[in-house]
Image 1 (cartoon, rainbow, N blue to C red):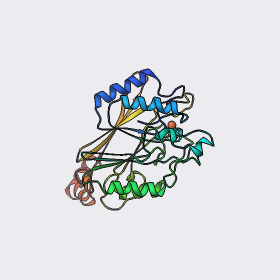
Image 2: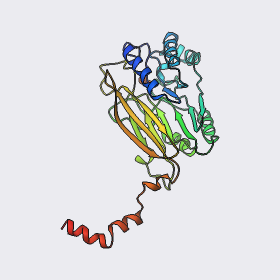
Image 3: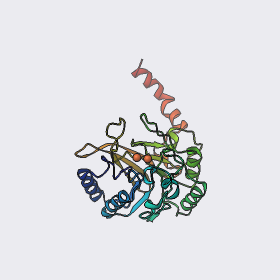
Image 4: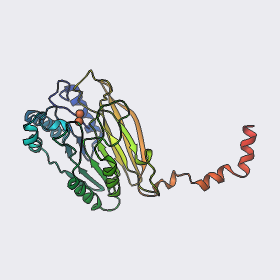
Length: 290
Ligand SMILES: [Fe+2]
Ligand SMILES: [Fe+2]
């Protein structure tokens, strides 16, 4: 989940939606709940208190990263006490290790630009090191607030600064799933949807969660919902759910083969294509479609 915006008039403090999230968590029984930033609307201590109480009450392991709304809105607090309220509840450097799962959080928030996200080099180095240290076969997940993949619809929120380099380093470190939020729109994309990556490399999926809070209800092009991620040794799936106001509606599922060369079952090689469409088949084709 992402962008709860506790403290905004249309933040998550909506008892119906809060209850529905609790029920969904109970039903799915996730190994981990991720909240990818903008827990609060103005970064105030009381907002952080409410968001943390709500998240802890879910009763699951949690991994939380800060969003641009989780720090004070204005200087001097913004500069002098940037993460003070956030860090009363959460680490800016979180890791979750479970059986077959390594999840690393990255802070992409800087007090120097309110909307634009940036990851410090030292933080990126540490995250990559933690990914690389995981056992082979472990699902390696990275969480940061600012989106890497562009949003599907209009937004003024630009993706993370230096996103190409960040993606390259995380993918080289074995990241298979990179989670974000910030734009309040869902995007599910695999790296090869937007660039050529030579060889049979493992999938690296970028999944931007929709928002949960809706602090500016009149702003167009903001979605409400959650993503559910599942994995076994062979496949990673991402399910997108939209909140209709009354129910969670599954809007789509995308499945990705795991591991380098794992597309074997689904791959169509050039040689296979020649075989299928060459020789005798050709004549049949011609007969069917003169
Ligand atoms: Fe947000
Ligand atoms: Fe944000």
